[in-house]
Picture 1 (spheres, chains in turn orange, cyan):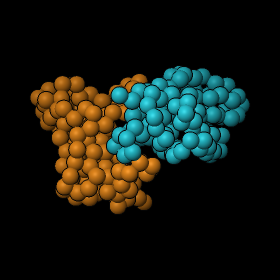
Picture 2: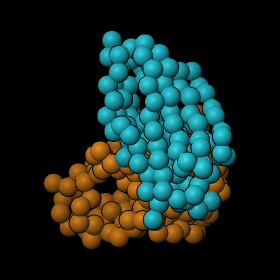
Picture 3: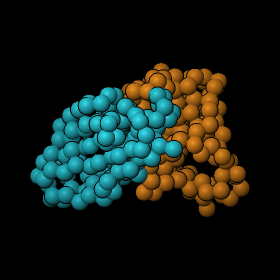
Picture 4: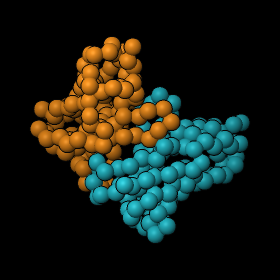
Length: 114
Length: 112
């Protein structure tokens, strides 16, 4: 079945550690996105990529990094510079970034700092 | 800066009743999206509204868009328990999918 796979589902990070969240899609979509969701809040865009080997900062990129070496993969690294990383992280994709294309979301990853 | 406000933020309904969720936004846009999220789960796309006056219906849910009023509504008809979820609207402010601004969501609880 086509879809977006995120892993791990749950992740615990110690202070000062970098962690990487995986996102893989088999929808043949060009555009991919990472969002952060905090309790009782809407989604905020961290990074997006419109095409392989290209990505752009979203509204809250500080403390995060991404890569887009393959069309189907868009991993997110939460670095130690991110001061408040505990949140629900959602990866998404769309056929392209043109307005009106449906955005499909993965199942999400819960990150907790311990 | 585009602001998107949903109301109510919390809604408790009885099964069989009708109700409307409102999504107001602050700048011109003719692209609006509605999503559903179950607790701890991903977001499911419900409707994509692409022009003024657009109306879409799926089952007991109907969404509409009034770009002049900068308002979208999500109407629930004869609610059932399975509709319990959080509903988000998102507005495109710049003609690209990476310019979506999400509302805070409306937590809907449908009671028997």
